[in-house]
Amino acid sequence: NKKKIAVLIGSLRKESFNRKVANQLMQLAPDSLELEIVEIGQLPHYNEDIDQNPPTEYVDFRRKIKAADGFLFVTPEYNRSVPSALKNAFDVASRPYGQSVWGGKPGAVVSVSMSAIGGFGANHIVRQSMVFLNVPMMQQPEAYIGSAHTLFDENGNLLSEDTRDFLKNYMDAYASWVNTF
Ligand code: FNR
Image 1 (cartoon, rainbow, N blue to C red):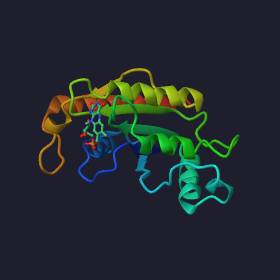
Image 2 (cartoon, helix red, strand yellow; image 1 turned 30 degrees about the vertical axis):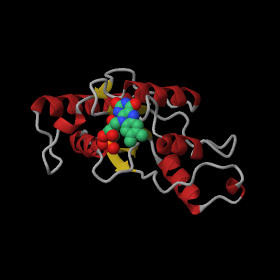
Image 3 (cartoon, protein in one colour; image 1 turned 90 degrees about the vertical axis):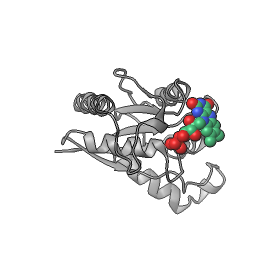
């Protein structure tokens, strides 16, 4: 039986390189994983006041996170940190207090940037929140994808076999990590 993996993308823009990388990761993943993108852009900023009577966006998102067996985060770096939309998603599914739906499921993070540093800051800030949310993150391999604007053709296909091999190897490793749970 396949493991259901929720894919969360930190960028909200249509032509996002992160979304393109996420699409490739989903295609290259082994059969043991069933990956599905869970959108985060519709979520209102987390506010405990509105959570007294939670909006349907919160309820739906929490249901999807709860139903997942694991998480794959694919994110850009914004000002050396994680984009607020992704952090907001972490926050929404962590509440109400004591009812977090994250815990105990295996995660992994890929950061994607146009810069050579490959979103290192964002990558590790995701890991920092996941320590607290009790999502055990795959340690190795790490994935800091730099020069993202050079990786794709106009149809969103990868230009290099090396990149494809790297991403495929990453998903094989993640599938093994998921299998240990
Ligand atoms: C950026 N970008 C960026 N890049 C980086 O490597 N480190 C950073 O700290 C930042 N900071 C940053 C802040 C804001 C507000 C924006 C909009 C962008 C550039 C970023 O890597 C680039 O826009 C990517 O293309 C974003 O990923 P998507 O949208 O292509 O997936």
